[in-house]
Length: 63
Image (cartoon, rainbow, N blue to C red; front, top):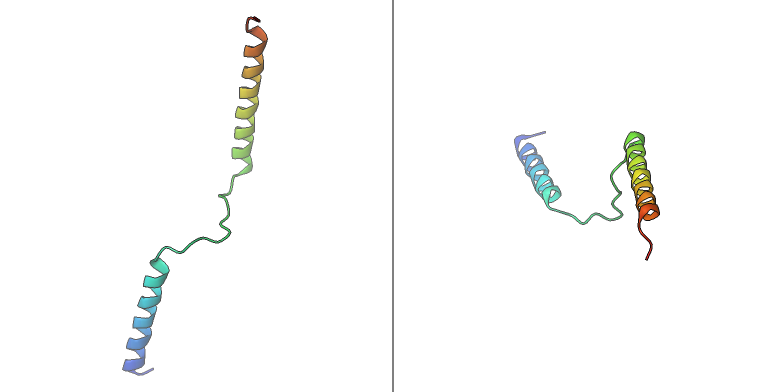
């Protein structure tokens, strides 16, 4: 590759990098991955919250 071609290639590479740096709309973006351990923690917290609501509704004075 001669010197002129190398310069053109380098400039094109920089231009492409600048274009990629611009924010592009994410089409069909995926949600972030949630690991099994994290899902188990969320499920346990949800179950504890539901249990607490059930206990509070049982002990609440009825009008």
